[in-house]
Amino acid sequence: MFRWNVKSYVMAILLGAMLVGCGSSPAEKQMEAQAEKIEAEAELIVEQRKTYKEYKKCVMDSKGDESRLRTCAALLKLIDGAAIKPSQ
Image (tube, rainbow, N blue to C red):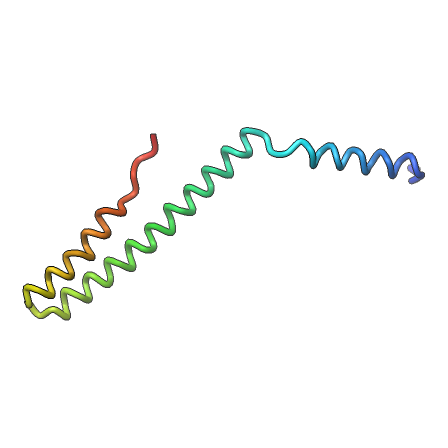
């Protein structure tokens, strides 16, 4: 049976400190960066869908009025301008 004594506690604390001090490996950092990128892309898609719904509502509410349709077209340009760029 293992007994915890002062030496065991000190060794456990030192081991824990060494593990914390090592930080993230390059692979972990890359995975975190990729996860952040995916989250940002997902947020962009949600915003694009929201803007598209606003565009559709704008077109329906415009009832053919040219000046209002131009305003609606600006919403559509926002969606096109914020398109997800392919990764390099």
